[in-house]
Length: 445
Image (cartoon, rainbow, N blue to C red):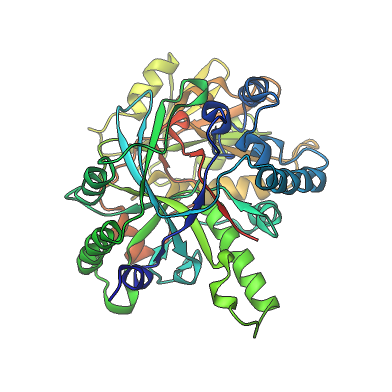
């Protein structure tokens, strides 16, 4: 069997990748995932000022900080128009079929490995009961899909920030691909904006390389027996980042498929696949970080009242943010610890709730947000990557921050295989500056 056929059985297709042409400033081209720095307009304004008139992925994405701004339809029209112009004006290269092996450094880790491939959306479903090769690790909020679907629907280009994880405890697949790829020169090597590290990529366009990838993934499929699954319910890829973007890609494909039933070649349409980066859960360059919360509307007393139903709930004031951070992050305590931050007030919460903190916390927060407006104020919630953002809050809109404890990555696949997705926004791969940057592209519609 050819490598292509073997990979197809593993949910993988070899994409035809387009990249910025030589001469394009890659540091200005590559920008961070759209769902980062959602409370830091200064970050995005600095990126905009740095990019200026240069070709940039910034001009073909919609940073979520602007999602609620007016003129969304016009923004999306301009995104599609810019994609067309980048293709027509030679800003992007001709398609080249292959995978790209990646090495990324960040301010926190010297090396993180990955490989860019396309995955079959027929092998993915975000619904909690789904038993597919590709599975969501966190709950998906259907209400968050329409803006992403609007951007993808009819888009000339796909430019991804989705990361899928594999459970390669021996950490052999990606280092092996690296040995093969680095026999040649990189196709790109660039520092990233806002002191976010460096990324380099090498093409893997030989069938022998694809066969190596197939060999390794077939071995990992055999290992799914340790999750208590197997056969038709094999579980090979867990969505690590970009869960809602992948869900939107699935929705657009299902929409397109339904509208074109019976069309010759339908199942070969590019929208059936989504381009992603595959990384190893056990890569030394990957840390699991909690995603903290900011609650807008309720005061500190209101948040304490909302969290009081947590099993074994107790709370006490702490003298400083540094001490609160240390106590919440202490791995040697049997309780689950949370921190509340409201201006200069710091509260430590302890609870005996089992499992991840978000399993018991998120339903209480959802109930609070859905409660009737208090004194004309409707409550809302934002999700924050990195402790700095939760301590800083939002100067324009006072909020109560909720600091979550660290998360262990061991057992992720087993938990998802047995119990389904975790509550939404339960974890993040690394700090905000470590998120995937848009760089590689693929023709879509």
